[in-house]
Image (cartoon, protein in one colour):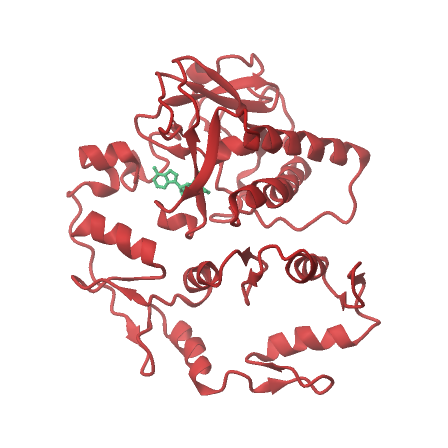
Length: 371
Ligand SMILES: C[S@@+](CC[C@H](N)C(=O)[O-])C[C@H]1O[C@@H](n2cnc3c(N)ncnc32)[C@H](O)[C@@H]1O
């Protein structure tokens, strides 16, 4: 999101930009506390797993870190409170969000110029090298004026971009910005921000906002030549199609023998040797440093212990991806994520052209856009 000087309304220090030393620790900490808050507060409230930066957890939190976590928690608690002037809801509009996106909707009529303080987020300046595309760069504010990028994480990060947005960024205090309406917003209307002229490609050519749709601009414009159909590799055993041979080869192993690696200690079987190896260290007590607090199981990785606690004991998101640490509310959501991020599987084929997609909502968007 590009922010020139004109949108810096309240904060004279421009949200902590002035002479602020760039500090990867601060950025990491913000990612970690935000992931914790969205898991604990927002995801429980919504009933699905929202975006995560996947930053490695800290070994220990200092007193200052805990105070920081508390402040971030307060932002989400206020945002999810019944008195909040907006709600955060599921949004299946953008394929890039992997079926687990969210959007902000007005819960009350708002006059033009309303500072929605509870729709805020914390800003931390980052080096470009810190940002990992598609992982931790999902909410970045860029200042054309100061030539710096800042992560902006908190409830406000769920506001989508619209080329004629109804809100602007408003700097509340050093390091904290919220949204302010720039025209009257009616209850039930989506609350949107303007990310910048070129956030979704040059002149926002890939923008999928409602305004672009209405004006047949951005990704809806008919100016591009029809996309050249990429020859897809077909699986001989099922309808799956793949872009790369390596993806097809990996997929084919599923049709051969799903469980060819079995554990010599407990007999559990796995389709991959790496999964068996990971499982086997669980039998070696010298390697398991993270015990479950509620049962005798022990884990080599802190994330695995947390995932076990969440799924087995707390019955939170029980469907975990077999290839990464993300968990999902339903098996379908997990499968769509797995298709998109790990196998490239595109089982949802368009009946009017050669395109196929990882999830039904992506197919639906394609049909609406192209046919
Ligand atoms: C700051 S997040 C907004 C919240 C997002 N919907 C989510 O749940 O993660 C930015 C991401 O939302 C999606 N997005 C928001 N507005 C968009 C738009 N106008 N066109 C395309 N994608 C958009 C893109 O995936 C983008 O990377």
